[in-house]
Image (cartoon, rainbow, N blue to C red; front, side, top):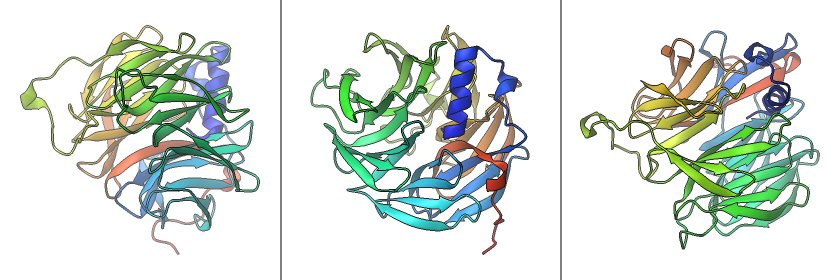
Amino acid sequence: MSSVWKRLYAIAAGAGLCAATLAAQDDTVVRIIQTNSAGTDAQIIDPATHEVIAVIEDVPRAHAAVDHPEGYYYYFANERDNTVDVIDTRTLRTIMHIPLIDQPNKLVINESLGKLYVGIRGVPYTQVIDLETHAIVKTIEMIHGVHNVYVTADDAYVVAGLGATPSSVDEHTIQVIDARTDEIVWGVALDGHRVRPMALEYNPDGSTERLFAQATRLNGFYVVDWDRREAVDFISPPPLPVSRQNFDGIQDGTGHGLLVLPDQSALWYASRLDSRIYGWSLPELEFIGGLEVGASPQWLTATPDSRILYVSIVGTMETVAVDLDAMEIVARIPVGHAPKRNSTHVLPADRVEIVGVGDE
């Protein structure tokens, strides 16, 4: 989630604003970035047209991208070179590489504290980068390597999902970091499962209400009560006949995409096994329905008005745009090799890219 979008998200949660309020303002521009886990580039999609309008070159095996709070830079987690690559948002050129201790996965920005958190998959750490100096200011020791990191809307906590198999069913594979001290303060066990993507739901005052977490080998997600600090439910989509399921290339990530919409109206889930996305209304968690989108759907991101959902599809190397009101696919966008993590970015209008597709 981009820092600007996160602010809109938190404001809407606190004020109960309608979805239209979350549309980009006249002085901002919305961009969707699709990274490619087996490629060396990333596509920039204009949600107004559902077309690729620019390509960011030389971002190999990028696991995720976030943007600077003022919109100056994109930050990419580079899994090949074990770096965070800093990209100018206007020229789309790399301006620096920040070396990491080992292979990164997802990264996230804590805007109010001016810090970038990077989950390290290869060794058990989360590294903290100062946004002003781009220096690593702390390396937080975890119990296992980190697959994904998230920041709460109030910037009070960073949530890390651990990617290794736990040693027991009671081992805390979700670990919560106090962002003021950068110390682990509590954790949650998921019945002995590794953690995949997560999503957060907020109270009216912007504090965290629930955490939703996917886990390995399970077609569904855990519901974690934030205050109780424990998983209280597990929810699955309606089962499909085996003949309609896809077992090719899903590894142990039966589900691998989870998103609470910016207006907090619904939670959406991507099932690799079912080749479908599924939705549940919030806060009731009533099943909305599902839509077949293609072989091995992965990550999810949405426009700030919560109307269009973008789904990366590894099997066909596309990003699919879904109109959530009509529950139909409105565009299939060719992207790169093994597209996985995608993200929404709301940038100042003066940071619009000036390099088009194929330009030097």
